[in-house]
Length: 411
Image 1 (cartoon, rainbow, N blue to C red):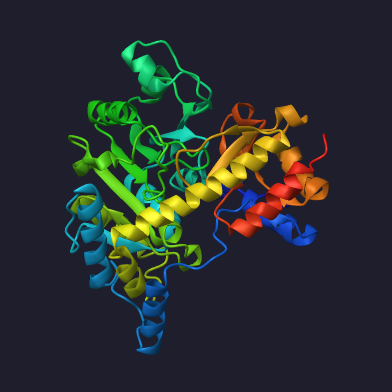
Image 2 (cartoon, rainbow, N blue to C red):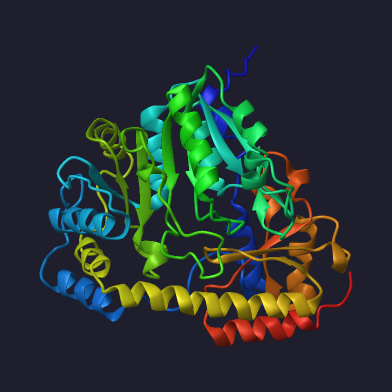
């Protein structure tokens, strides 16, 4: 008689995570010839100074293993960049580690800080790697839902009558209730993917207050730090700049989004030396090291003048406005993002009842690919009729997508 072996707990934890929605939608775009506004990657290259530096590094033999924490020049550039833009001081020799993109940085941080059974507070919808990284650590998600058109957390905190301007917000009471005796850390993303929300100073203060009150860490995903648009309610403020937060925060960013080089996978973690040391100990058994000839190029990019970052933001804001106008004309209920590469929209007015079904049918109906945001929620009903479009594409690509969307027939 044969017996079935017990399922390994890790296998069981990871069973819900199959092919990502991005892979499915990108494959659908290839199969149908649709304009792919699903996955968030630009279709143009980054600054020429950065590309030239990468080519020079390849030619001059910088192709072997770099130091485990990253090459010194890049770590210094990261430290200088954070001091320049956010007045945050990190020692490049011990408080910064270079990673294989922000995705590895998030996974390594969670694995370094969490034990099985620990709880992680996070805002949903969230990037899909968050849930997978928490599951890998054997930790437990405690989601707090961002809702479009809800009364602003700022208003609730101040006792004012709520505004409904279509932007995403959360219930402060729900956030407080998510913290408990097993809470280990807050996984925090601002500017926020997929909603485009930029958390306000009052919202940040509440998160910081709860971290201090419950003595928990914060892991902050800030890859869109330079993509906060001029009509946002507030600018980007790193959580680590708030009182008492630097010593308990691992701050994550990357070159991919800011310099249009998502395929390079060069990210970093900054924070107090004991926490960064723990991340490095995990990272060495994930990728060991990465991107040796690309690290000098990212160091060059981080030192570009302020005008690069301003022009980069303004260009993306124009592309956002182009896509939003087209979506509005096509009948979508558009939710204006304050930052990032993405705009979300409600499909109800077009007869959509389920975002997954809507997105799977959209390429055949009009030749455009989007991503259903319900897959980024623990509570799919909260995002059932919302879909996400990426506007980090060339203007002519967006114009073609807009033309197709305007011909979208009713479902």
